[in-house]
Amino acid sequence: MKQRIWELDALRGVCIIGMVLMHFAFDVSVLFGLSQVNTHPVFRFFSAYGGIFFLLISGICVTFSRSS
Image 1 (tube, rainbow, N blue to C red):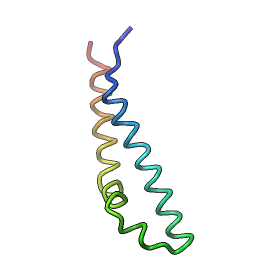
Image 2: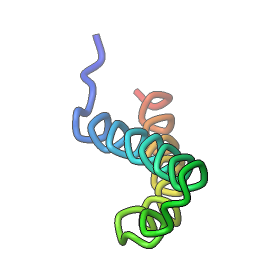
Image 3: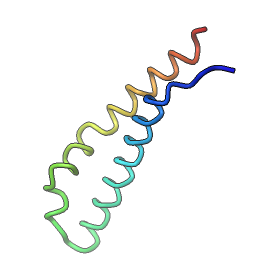
Image 4: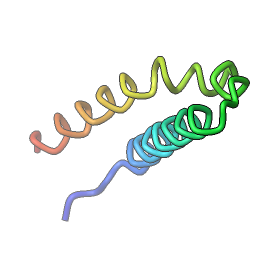
């Protein structure tokens, strides 16, 4: 059985949760007109870099899974 690298799994989980929360906050701000949600630094970070980090970490996981 291959040993999983839990740090990569944890980072991937954080990225997924961040993207879900970012999309939820964006939808809430559009539905209810809460513009202060879009200017929060955490929201701006995940909207700018969340997808990039997720793709980078997923690429690393795919690379590790193909090598012995």
